Length: 272
Image (cartoon, rainbow, N blue to C red; front, side, top):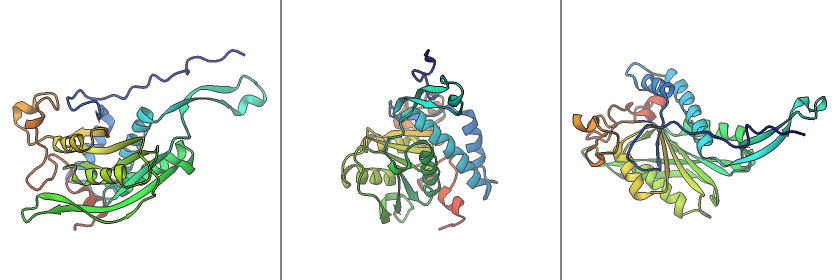
């Protein structure tokens, strides 16, 4: 029986914009996502549209990350036509359903994105190998409102991370202090070692990328947009990361510019 050869391997290549932050950073070149994200960030956008936009964007992000990173395998799957045509068997590449993944929801803004990824992973992989953990943490600030660290309030975490891909879907990568703390915990305090750690953001800043690169250089960072709006005009005219030390995306209160405001507050209509 002749076998189809067109799907023997995948030629998928994630579209990315050029930058100088290193191979672990992936800034997606996706005009559809940019359009939806600009609407999400707009001053006049509120619930329920905010919730719909976050869901759509993270469905897109999860698909991109899975296609780019998850291991692949060859399959031979009979279709419904096999009863009348013995040749009716799909033979080709598919995502390896035996991949073990943990998605981590960081309250508040990361709760919904993690749930979206969890749902998609259950469709794509063996659900018994997919887990969702929950972290409750917040920024610690000084009297001037500047971030000084991270406070952990509570957590519901499965102990085993050995050979698992760990995903952190969190909309805003601002200072990086909270995520760096969470990654340290997953890298050092649980049973086993993750095979890969992935951060999935809608927006990141140069400051965030520097924090993660220094604290956890092996972490793969995916984002739809880089915001460095407080950088000098001549720096903004260069490719991202070329003059990294001069780039600035955070104001004095550590909020992203142009950014989206307090996404956790907006998503939950809770202004505390």
